Length: 181
Image 1 (cartoon, rainbow, N blue to C red):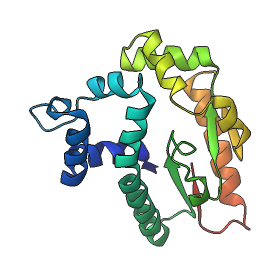
Image 2 (image 1 turned 180 degrees about the vertical axis):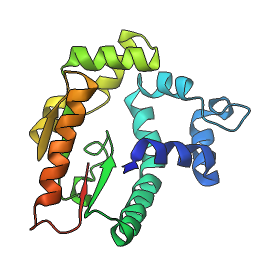
Image 3 (image 1 turned 90 degrees about the vertical axis):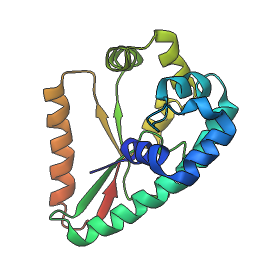
């Protein structure tokens, strides 16, 4: 599985050209003394100003997309399975749906999503809502999905649903090498 967030974090923290562009636009203080992006400070900037969010995406997305595309191609040659999954929350925002044969959207009610993010990131409800407003609405993602996994239950239930779709796609003999989100 390829995780777009991990690729983006690596690019943001280690690619000298990307870091230079980010510093030029957001200032020297956006990176910590250890060379890593201050993600909390960046979130406060980009999730309250759509222009600054678009600028960050314009800086980071091309490199991330290129790396993901290269990883997909490499995995297609060595994978035991005929599926490659890409976890990418911003697939529609980055306008890269055409890179994939199928789109799987994991959907939960807004209440579930808000509570999970607050618990995971330890941020305020208003900050979560700002993040949601910066993204394409969940309903549009669901509308454009090939598969929808409802995730309002526990982890065991989610795993069961994911395994079902995985097995379905894997056993479909007419499906050649595919990439999935």
